[in-house]
Length: 276
Image (cartoon, rainbow, N blue to C red; front, top):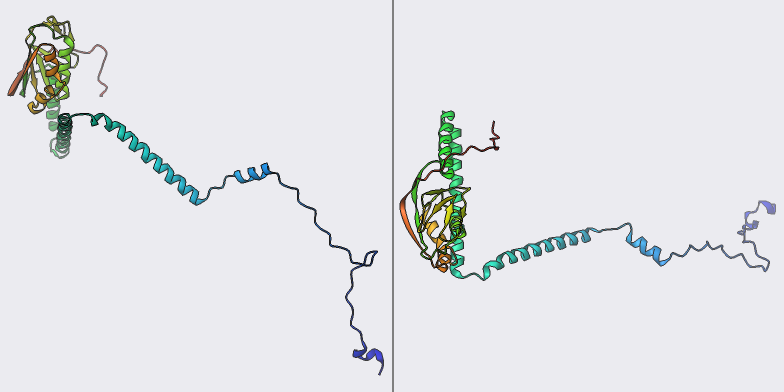
């Protein structure tokens, strides 16, 4: 048998060896070029922009905003209540009673308007019901304008001024205090007090809407006596102010006050109704 055909006589192939260099050693691997070094400013900009907000950071920001809003509301509420902290107990009780009374009046007015709406919606003759309500509204406006007489419960306030020290502004303050307490009709020495009523003159020479009046000044007021009298007698109110002017003020409640001084109905020169 030939040696060429014997598999055992075949020699295994050797792997190719890397070419040796001039010294006989293999060449070293080629290193990639080093990346350009990044400056500190570039790293800072890369960290800040574009902004990356995580979900946790967003939740923390919302909670901080809510906390700040709550603190602002608390500070404002505290500053609003600071004016009442120095008030006396009697004044606080009076203020609370006045707030309750005004709230009750508003609630009564709301119920009345709701009843009127229900009547209009449920009435078989809506036109007739509307006519009745229009007449009632006209009567109420006539009382406020002073063109019709009025009667009802209220008080009589009599101011004596023997020294002539009560000026016009003190009488105007009295009217304003009565209106704030719920007065619906006022008459002073036979002169009807309306929205545009003015007081002028000095002590002993007072005029109401250009008509001279003399002391004692008698106010006939229609309204709830339980609201009107306390409003005049509050500490630092009308009665105490008049006493400082050496004047006296006497308040009497009554179940029937008649205010019959009338004002002529005046037609406006320029204003016109905007209703069709």
